[in-house]
Image (cartoon, rainbow, N blue to C red; front, side, top):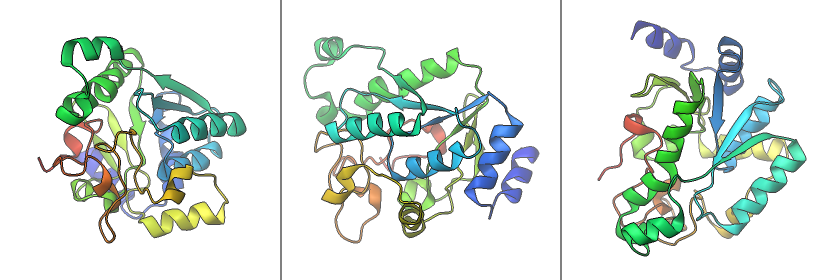
Length: 235
């Protein structure tokens, strides 16, 4: 698409703040951000607060988050006065258990992610007049994200905006340190990418591997499906 090509040429080497400023002012009250309150997300939220104090942040509460993640998210929402909203699965855990059996996250992690992440977000997007979603994806996180562009359009015609795409882990944490940003305490325990708490979903990466290598380790899966056809697991 010519317009997307022009935007990606414009933002190929742009700073995240420039992309965020364009997003907020080009689509006023028509964009939002999804965040699991990992370090990348906290950096983007910190930048967004300088542009729009009440920018909507959506958190997918899968029911499987680490207690540390929930506590950190609640503290940051309160301290930063964030316009944060929880998104719950459409099917209750008891119904998931009844229909699909126990420990679905081990037997079929793709279905588990679809029930607890993808379907509730798809339902939310149908309800809201949203033209764009901001995500904290970076190219260096995994091979599946190497070919992403700053601005993309998903299968539903919604713009997917990736302001941090060109940043690497070192630059991200340099920003965190410089601005003294709070982060999930699980990073101090050696986790690099923090998702749901079952060990089959989130574990500590091996030294020298990319930061998402600890997600669904041994399952041939490094993406949950939230980013649709834009990223693909190697499975």
